[in-house]
Length: 284
Image 1 (tube, helix red, strand yellow):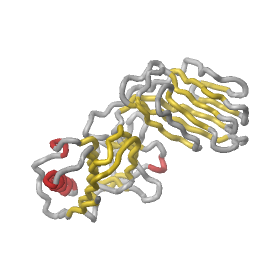
Image 2: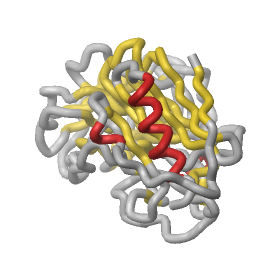
Image 3: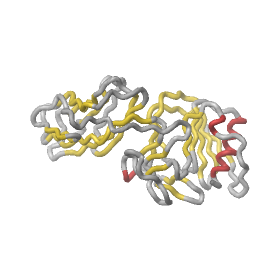
Image 4: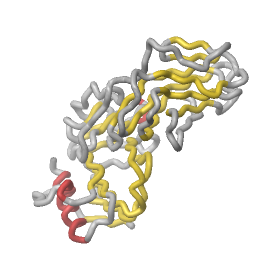
């Protein structure tokens, strides 16, 4: 269900209720300069001006957390044999072979409870025979897998294991680069692929997506099918989506001045209150 609310950008009403005062808030993002970073890894380059890319957008509903890189570069990957060669974070398979069921990458310690992000890159070799690459965090159920070429970040629930496992199948040749393994807060929106990062814009302050491949991704537990998504959309107004199903990766690719997610269906009065707040966002 979609509720489109009217917005009057010329005469906003200062809100008496803020999003966090309404129960069930699980995601709250606004394009403020203290919440956006151009890079995903390490959150080290802030967005400071219009047109700059957004690789990480902080969720205000929960504290931001990102651990140090957990990859143990001094340790040796286990399970490798010829023709596989391994050097630090790089695993190279020069030609398609018989496959390797589990190349375990040691971590400096087992992750703590929460979410973990594995940032890695797959580069196809000249003898690459098709989709034949998978990765998983040991003991996680369900495991995660990718067979695409390029850089990707996988977010998964915590694991008791102190290894990352890559499974290389018979038809794969190429290189796997493990960029980082970090504990993170799951609700923050991110984009690893540089060319798929949206951009910050002003008047009003907003995050702009190109409508082609730009997207920000946030990861949630299973929130069920009664979620409410609220956006302040320039030129249109406040959009309220009810009865939304959110579980795992949630993709945001809609240009907006802010987005809220509640893990339940809001009442008519609550919708009116968040609409007043989001109308006010157009002037900030």
